[in-house]
Length: 499
Image (cartoon, rainbow, N blue to C red; front, side):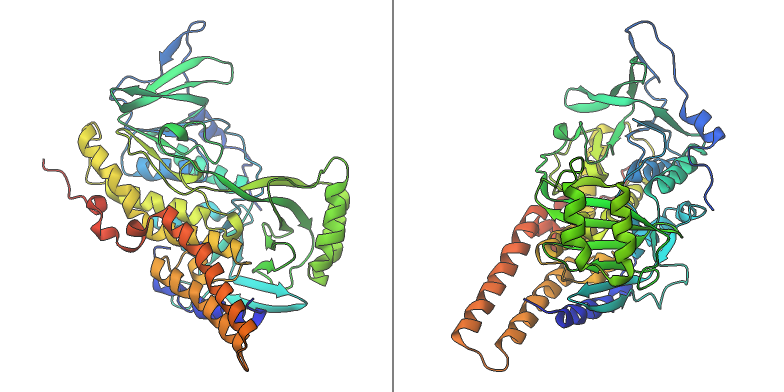
């Protein structure tokens, strides 16, 4: 395998490319503000057991299901473009998650492009300038190459819930955006075209809402995706999450990756006094928290492999018992183009969260969709709208497939790979493939020195075959033509409709 020096070399080489591509990384109001809350709770009373419409056809342009990382940002973006947006979110209280806390620099650039960069302010967010890698007592620091960008550009890490509430507040501040708390139970279809949604409120009342475009952003547990895509969800591992308090990371304002046995351990700041720790546990089962097996595992297997500076804080946090787990899901985008409907966010496409690329993909997708829809002032032309939505699935591929493929490859290849691609600043599929095989070839070269032998040649051949077995199936799932030759796809570009 490639040693830590090879890893540092390839990471450094790719970091130097990170600036080449701009596409793509004390708080207040823990809940939605009073003004925003009033806007978020508009509803219509109904009779007992009746299902009534919350709007007449033609009153809403876009229905968005979900107001999380993707949905809240999308609502503000489309609302700012003058669309009448109706958002239905299952729970408008502040989320409490152990992922969605690290925004790569490429994602932050997209946030700026969407006019949402102030959502990382006033939530005690921390700037992130790169990564520190640890293996066998040795370490290497690798910084994002941000020299050509404005001084404000960097990664950001924060509490996921605080960030989402800021975006919800900003979306709800627009007069043409309405947020409603409710659970969407089904899509309303007429002759193969989605016309709206049916949902129920917390007290069980049933409602329907209509719009020419429904965008489903209801997250990784989506109950609507099966009618809009072919979901092939894989769960390669689980994260065990802890929050370390009042401790200092060995390298300030950097994510820390420990190349541990059996899989990586992550540390990054989420506030000025807290550090998130995510322990990757391969497989779909984790030691039991209730009977103490998890605490024993963390102390006996994980603790000895973490940097000495974090050891005491780690053990103290385990002893406190505030341990949470979450399955890590990956799902390639395999949409069924459906008139009147679109999937976005984790409901549509997921990758292993090791690389922290999910929000970067989501905000890149929102930029693509916003630009695609701008020529369409009237969304009621179903056939034209459908053609534009088909284009979305192709136009998103260069960024999304690069980050998706990298996430899967890095996890299967022991986190050895290009950080500029990871940061979302260089989302070019060909760069990904070249750098991935550069790691493998560099490893083979080191293996064959100083003199090749039959055994070393055999191991080298197995390394190349193993690398191919990792990346080619991922590329196939993403779509070879869409990744490398998107301009050959008929839906690549749509001219504005003829008036």
